[in-house]
Image (tube, rainbow, N blue to C red; front, side, top):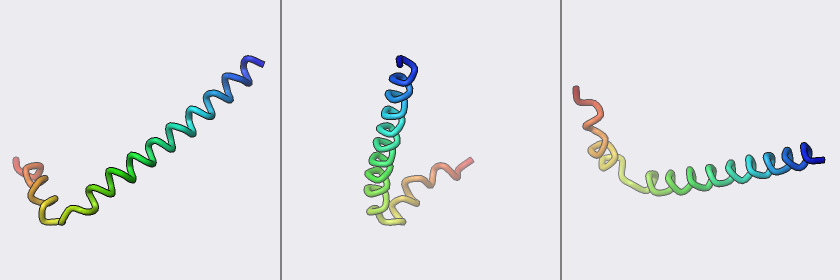
Length: 50
């Protein structure tokens, strides 16, 4: 009984975390996708410098 209860809690927790990650990714992408590509290119251009 305890093992089944723990498995149920783990399953619910896993599903909840997946929902949180999906929501966060959607929000982050929503912000990033609205920015002009030129601005993103300038913002991250320092990554290409050696």
